[in-house]
Length: 89
Length: 309
Image 1 (cartoon, rainbow over the protein chains, first blue to last red):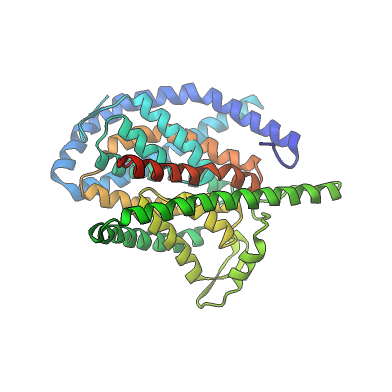
Image 2 (tube, rainbow over the protein chains, first blue to last red):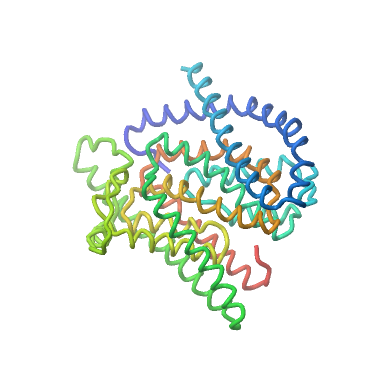
């Protein structure tokens, strides 16, 4: 699809953002791997216990965890993007 | 990686990649992407009940990331999203009850499937016609002007605008203004009806039914495409949270799988949301066309094989 108005400026901005995202990906990947092993590993058994024995608490914690993680990830990705966009300018 | 809640053994890389792809699509089109996530989880060996519930939990996380990004870009109408959440939850509940009633009534699955296919194909055909016509009009206009200027996300063109304007003029009290979307006045009942229909399809066919709601936001309510995408995502946070809680209470959510998928979806949703800034509304609508067709293909597959994806 073609880029619309102010094509040159738009294209330059887009390529700038996507280049910054490419730099961000390996760092983000390393953070995610660390997260898998540290956080999810320790949470697994506890959540399994809640799922089996305390359904209401498990449901509430599930919602809290997914929203909390999403907010944190959004914050991390925005911060990384800002750092790498700033550096490449 | 072993997930103790569902007892499934799934590669986290697979989950992250699936989450990423759905994130890009969700951020760009404002849909939940359950028609891809559900089958992808099933293909990885997750039981059907866990696939549905876990997919909903993952949709919540992905929508939070994408909606936050869209909000930063000025693409979320909070008032509209909150009103719609009520209609969607109500519609989803009625849809789920209706499906139960229809199951008992006999071979209504065939009727529901055929109606769904007709609606999906109609949405796609209509959107191709409308966005193509609008793009042609824009080209003609641009040819007549030396510098057409940059449009904001609140200024969107549609060849269907005359119908949308008539709908906005319907005086069914109470009326509400949506300044964030540039709508001066619209009946609250029309907003609730639109979200109720979206919820109804969600209850009928599963998933978030964003492929129906997003076009209705644009063509029925007259919301500019960029705002329709962002607002739909915001609304999905509320309705999918409700669905996740409901499924979790039935033991159908493996939150660990959803959390892993969400790590990929977070970055994908950012890419999708940022990408919308580089495309005009009619082009986003044109690119949206295959999504309802995928929905139709899933229904055809279900009808032919008897397996629900």
